[in-house]
Amino acid sequence: MHKILSAVFLAPEIKRFEVEAPKIALKRKPGQFVIIRIDDEGERIPLTIADSDASKGTVTIIVQGIGKTTKQLNALGAGEFISDVVGPLGRPSHIENFGTAISIGGGVGAAIAYPTAVALKEAGNHTISIIGGRSRDFVILEDEMRRACDEVFVTTDDGSYGRRGFVTGQLKELIATRRIDFVLAVGPIPMMSAVADVTRDIGIPTVVSLNPVMIDGTGMCGGCRATVGARTVFVCVEGPEFNAHEVDFSTLDRRNKTYWVQERQALAEHRCHLEDALTEKLQETR
Image (cartoon, rainbow, N blue to C red):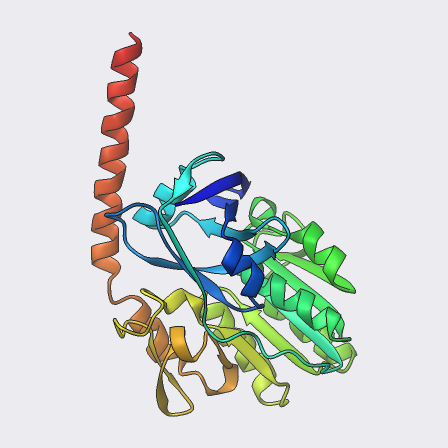
C-alpha cells in the first residue's frame, strides 16, 4: 500500500498527488513512468513520474480524470492509499547539451514535459517551455516551468491567457527568430503530430512521448503498438519517447481509439455508482 501525502487539484479534473514510494523515488529518471492500481480489483494504468523526492521517499504524479480509473483516483485525498505503484518503467529521456531546447506541454502533457525540461536545463541547455491549454483554467505547472526554464510561453485556445492559438503558432515564431536545436512535445496525438510537421522539413531533432497509447505498461497486452520508422514498436518498453519525424501518427490515432466504446461504457457505469452512493448518503442525512 502506498500512502497519499498530498492531493491538490491544479485545474478542472487535473490533480497532483504526492505518494510514498521510496524505492521508485531513489531510482527514477526523467521520462519514466509508474503503473498504478487503486485496489485489488482495479485496472492497471501508466502515469508519468512528474517529480520525486528521494529524501522524503515520494513520487509526484499528475492525473487527468478522463476515464473510470482516473476519475476514481482523483476522488482520493491525502491520507488515503493506492494499492500498487510499480516502477520506474520505460526508458529515460535522452539528455545532452543540444544548445537551445524547447519543451512543449499541451494540457496535462506539461506534467510529462516538466521533468525532462529540468534535466535539459541541468545539462547546460538554454531551455524554453511552451505550455498550452484550452483556457487559462487548464494551464498547469507554469510556476514550476518558470523556475526550471530560461523562457516560458503560454498559449490558450480561446485567448483567455497568454497567446491566443495553439502551441505550434508560438513554436513557429520562435523558429523564425532564433536557432532551435531540439524540441520535445508531449500532449494529445494531434498536437504532437502538428509539432512534428513544423520541425520536419527544417530538420530540427524532435522527440514525442507516446504515453497516451499505453495500457498495461509492460509490453504484454500489445495495446501500445505503434509504427515508428516503418517498424512496429511497443511504446511502454521501447519508449515512451521516439523520434517524432518517424512516428506514423495516423495509425497511432486509430489504435488509440480501439477501446473507445468500452471506455465510455465503463465510465458511464462508474458515474451511475457514484450517483447511487451520493443518493444513499443524502438519504442518511435526512
